[in-house]
Image (cartoon, rainbow, N blue to C red):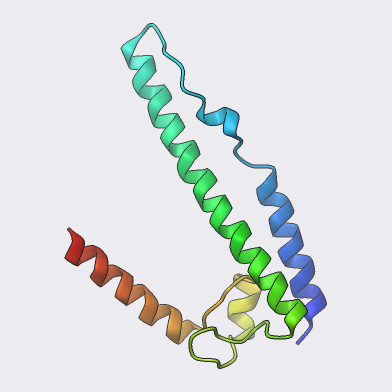
Length: 116
């Protein structure tokens, strides 16, 4: 496995994410028009969602870089089997093989359905 190309890809993704949404995008301010307040609130919610997604992805990227350093990159964290090259090229910070990821997704959907 060519760890260097994956490491370069992970570093590029992390750098790209660091230039995204900033905390200034979620500043709360009162506007004179209630319609503007609603739009500003929706924009702020979108910015917060984007910040959370970026933060989670950067966290996964950092974990993948740690796995490269440890020599465990490309191994499924649940099943301890290799993560496919195709999956790693598409999602270099993948922690699970496709089979385990699908099982995880099903469990998450069931949990959400039960909570509703």
